[in-house]
Length: 329
Image (cartoon, rainbow, N blue to C red; front, side, top):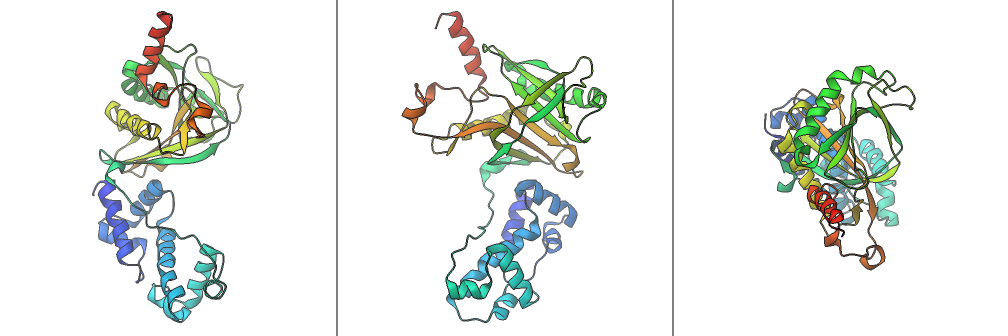
């Protein structure tokens, strides 16, 4: 099987080539030489939408050209774009755009179309893919786990190790966990800043108050967050220090983009989320959530230029900050 980037890039190109014929997920899976089940799961993990819905949206978007620029009958347009029946096209059109094809023609409605999905080289990460950010509202997240001090110098190596140990040894002790397949890795920074962070491999719980001995309770407060996600052709336990470092660098690349609409909140807690049930035997998925805020003019927000502010994952900042305090800065 191809890596995720090659496989999905080929599938997206195949969809665009076949907008004027009936094509299904099974057809695309045949071209990609994978099972339809694996392709549908991978597509949903990567793009967080079903492949059948994406195909339908792209066909409808392509059909708009004929609808508004020609006098072709609705039934002929439906057949042209691979819909079996005129009514099937009309129903799909109404769900997508909120109006019927005839209403679109006669009333001149402006509609928002689904553009083609694209993968670019910067999405590649080893044998996997990296996406984001999206911006989501995360509600209060109550957690129970094992609190660890993780030195910045070895964080990429140590965090995956303690995560695996917690999953194998401690998870079963937490009887009030929500479900049996969600892992949360919460990172907090001590105050005052030092050369380590607090990392808590944990599981979500309905409420606190039933914490096993030796474990710890914490709550990630409701926040607007930037969400990034990674798809890898391996098991979760195979996430290693090199891969973790690549992911943090990709997140920081966004943080340093001066044209980005949102800024990542500096020094605040953030977490990664894994749902073991997402692993399909070939591909896994991991998500990162870090608080964010919409940017305002720099002179209204910051007393210092942006270059003086740390990145969310910048180890050197925290080490430098400690040194500067000791020097009386």
